[in-house]
Image 1 (tube, rainbow, N blue to C red):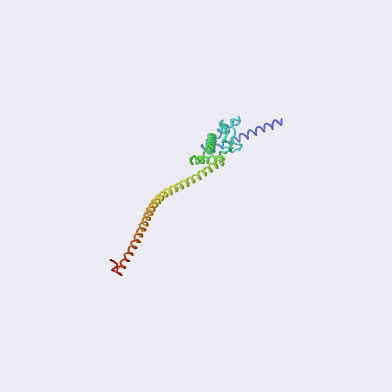
Image 2 (cartoon, one colour; image 1 turned 45 degrees about the horizontal axis):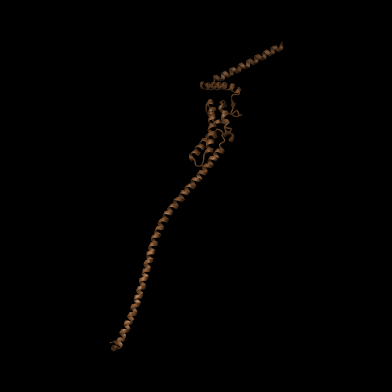
Length: 251
């Protein structure tokens, strides 16, 4: 009899404590303004909607931590995570920036980032050094927001930067090649003009050589004529002198 009375008292005590807790919760809600109460109701409704689904095993957390900003609910996740790019470049993004978005849209945004990462990696490894520089820059720009969501972009970023460095080096060599070719063309044109001038001078030299040879020949002729005339003059002078010395013999 005594045990029944004590049990009844314990049951009554528990009911009293539970009622007290309900009153406290009600008082807590009544102390909030309308906007805060609306937020609380929205959060409670969202929790009620998510909890049964999670218990059925349909949704699994993005990772094992409690800090995940959303729960995987879309069947698309299996297809996305099985993509070959995530085998080659395993990722474990935290998606913490998604906490700034509505909870219902976080999963879709996360899938979008996963697909974006896969597309950027695919494009990055398809790019060639003959492709426009802007294509590389676009990939690098697309990687930045992914990094803030916890993606490891180092390997892709390094590849793109190395290729940009190679492109820059090739561009520099191309510019140097163009400058050297321009200088060669310029000097070749100058050389052609110089060769023409040399040809003219050679022609003048040949003409001068001919004139020089002619002048030498004329001089020799004149020298020979002068020599002959001098000999004639000497003979004449000798004759004059002989006559002057013996006029009678002159007859």
